[in-house]
Length: 108
Length: 158
Image 1 (tube, each protein chain N blue to C red):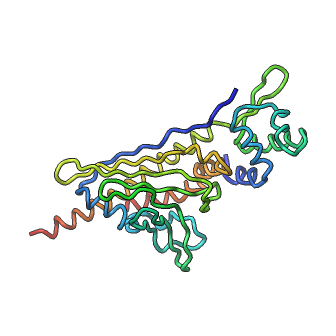
Image 2: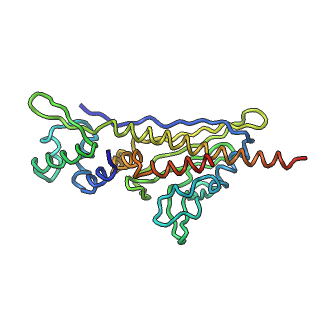
Image 3: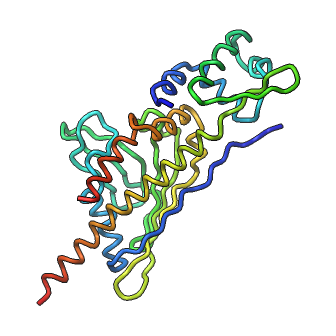
């Protein structure tokens, strides 16, 4: 999954609004289009791009498709930050303990 | 059916062989000594990473060309016990006051010469606003901070 694809997908303000609409819960195309100043076919096209970028996913419900924000993306963010802070704190620990070592070495 | 997108905070805890006051001092006043230079958001190479030691203080970087980029602000400042920073990076790794998550770092004495450092990065669901979806994609890739992290790991291990 590439970061550039997601950024490109979100460069469009209407697509950002589609995502914001989905924050309140899953919706069919018609439900999304109702809150936006664009046609249903345009919304469908935007959803296709968002889906390809991994930002939105869908499921069948009867004869229609329901769209929702892909929660795995948020899990990926959290996993990243988890790893990020492990490494940041390890760097901090190395610095603070190397100072303590120096002080001990300087003591007679 | 409505569903609120939420995401659990990241919690980290380590014990360092240093007293509480020293641990706080190295983390904050010494921030630039351990935060890797590669890890910056400005266009220019980073010369310094700084935390201003006061409530409302800036958390920011200075570039080698003299430019400055904000990362966030000091929300709580209680040396040597804890401090809280806001983190204002949007999906394009630029400062954006509309996107605000928080990082709290607490320092608790553990015996004579050791300190437990607890870190919490919270309100992560706020990344889901605006172009935040791009951030979590970006940070999860080698093209984003993933690549910088590899350098970070190297730095820390050196």
